[in-house]
Length: 508
Ligand code: BG6
Image: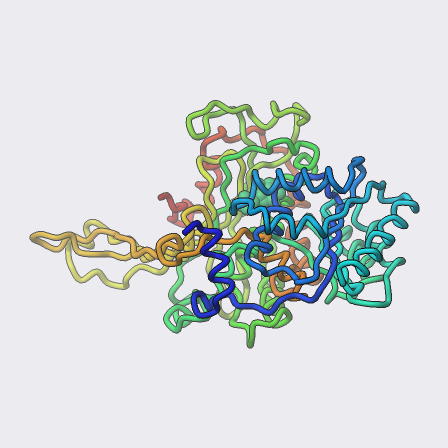
C-alpha cells in the first residue's frame, strides 16, 4: 500500500494507529499573508495538503492567500498545486486536492491598501456564508519581520466580534530584546497572549518532541539526568548548506539570530527543563522559561564565532561567505557560533552545555548528546590501558532520526577487550508511518488552538537577553574573518573551547 493510502487508513481507523488520534479543529478560514513567498510554497501548502490527506483539517475550511503579486484565484490554486506536487511528502490525489482547492481564494493587495483590506473582508464573509467557516480566523504572517507590527495593528483594528481569531508569527521575532518587547507590546494591544502563536519550527519536529517523551515517559533517565551523572551536554545544529539566496536576511541576522536565539535555545531548554506538572501549554513553557532565566551570561572567552571561507562541502567546491551574491566583501556577519553555557540551578550547576551552530559545515546534523561521567573504577587492567569511553545518549534530531546509547561491550574472543557499541532506536525501523513535517504539526496545533509548541512572550524575552549579552561583547573586537574553511567543523577556537577542559566535540 502506498504510504499516503496507509496514512489515510490509519487516520480513519483508530484501532490501527492510536498514537495520534486528535479532535478535529473548529470550522475556520486560514489567511496567509505573504502567499507568494517561499515559505508558503515550500512549507505551508505542502503541510496543509498532508493534513488534508490525513483528514485532520476542519470539515468546514477555507484558505485565503494574500500578497502583492497580481494573481487570480485560479492561478493561485494552480501554483499551490505545483508546490504540493514538488514539495509534499504525499503524492497529489485529485479528490483531496479538489476538495481543498474549492475553498481557496486569493486577494492581491499591498498590506497598507485600504481597498485590499476591504476585498479580504468581503472574501472572508463570502467564505463564511458558502463554506460555514463561522467567522473563525487564523492569520498566518509569513512576511518579513519589518511588516509584522503594522499587519497586527491592521488586523487588530478590523477584528470581528463573531468567532475566534489567532495570529501566527514567523521567526525571527524582533532582532534584539528591545525590538521584541516593542513588537510584543504592539501585538498585545489587539491580541491576547493566548491568541498569539510564535513559530519556531524546530518545536514541530517529531524528534524534538520525542525529547519530552524520552525524558518523561521513561523512568530510567530522569534519576541520572543531572550534574551527578552527566559530565556535559553537546548540542549541534550543523548545516552543510550556505545561505542560499537569503543574503539580505542573513547579513542582518547571522547565525546567532537565525538559529542560536531560537532553535538552539529551544533544544537546550527541552534538554535541561524540569518535568512539567502536565503537558498543557503553560506548564511546559513555564519550565522552559525557568531554564532560560537560569542561564549564566557567557564571558567572551566562552563564545566563539566564525565565518566560512571557500572550501569543499560534500565533494564540491563552494564559495566563501564574503563571495556570496549580495554579501558585503568585508562582512563581519558570523556563520558559526559555539559556546560553553551554564544553567545555574540545582540540577545543572557546573555542568557545561557546549553548543554549536553553523553553515557550510561538513554535513547536516542536529543532535543532542548527553555525555555521562565515566565509570568510577575500571575493574580490568585492559580497560585502564585502553580507556573505556564514557556512555553517551545521543538524540539524533535529523537526519536518521532516532536515539542511540553508546555503551562499552566485550569484544568476542579471549581476554577482556572492551569496545564502544551503540544501542539504536531508529524511527524509520520502529514505526510504520513516515515522519510528519514540522509545519504539519504546527499548523494543526494553531487550528486547534494548542500553543504548547509555540514560543511565549517571556521565552522570547529571555532568549534575547542572552543573545544581546553575547552580541554586546562582540562589539569590542573584530576577529579575522573568514576563519574556517567551508566543509570543516568551524574555527580552531571551537575545538579549544572543549580541549581546555580535556573534552572534545563528538564525531561520528
Ligand atoms: C531556519 C533558518 O529557521 O531553519 C535557516 O532560517 C535554516 O537558515 C533552517 O537553514 C534549518 O531548518 P531545518 O528544518 O532544515 O533544520
